[in-house]
Length: 194
Image (cartoon, rainbow, N blue to C red; front, side, top):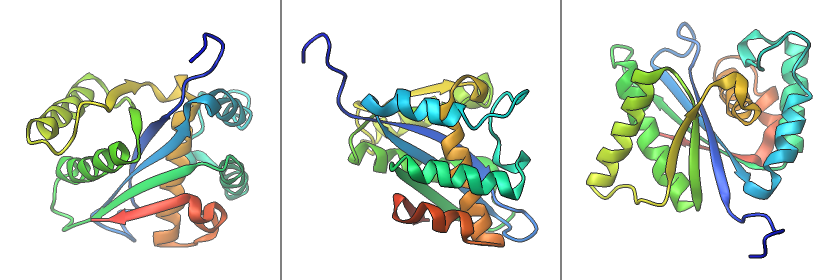
């Protein structure tokens, strides 16, 4: 690779959501936007353009339906792959267990798809550390290799993390009320139910 060429490969940007507890109890959603490294700057700019004056970041649940339509159309126009893992379990199952099960499936699938890095929206030092401990445990039992690196970043600082938030919102909407947003994304979204 010459010094002027850009790196090859893909990275994943990950966010999570519980579904609507009233309409879809016991459901946890973990989404990854899979972005080619050489396209990240363009994708980042497209997402930044969606931020309204005064907004720190896009957050699906805070947006109007009109804005959700606009966000889903913009994300669809980026023409990239999105991977979602959905776990529905007994509502008494802990959120930690739901997240760990989803995370295990998601990371293994991302590694299979050639992702070299997975960046999560940070949930704070203790939760971030638990993610890293799960990764080490998965490596210890040979479910995950060493090629996928894990990072955490605050949501407001990285517009690429706004994409999986929107994907989670579209999936939740499809499960509880309307498929409009998920339909807009079409075959770009692959969903694994566990």
